Image (cartoon, rainbow, N blue to C red; front, side):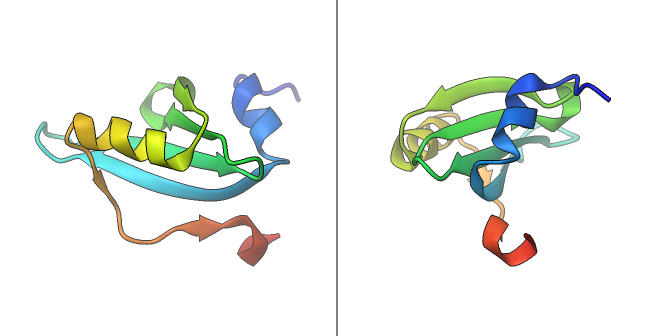
Length: 85
């Protein structure tokens, strides 16, 4: 079965960690998923929009600054690929 989300499908083989970020102001809160790959690149996906790629950053720091600029808050904890693969 072909994935509707080619960027996410490609990432499934190279991801290192996943974080959830939330914008707590609207209700229901807006949730985005940050996927960090083994090369240090970080992609942000929107689970509410079929995991559409929102933005891509070359570093974790750039991605984190992008979230903080829009007042998102990181949900505590990370899911690490090495723990589930």
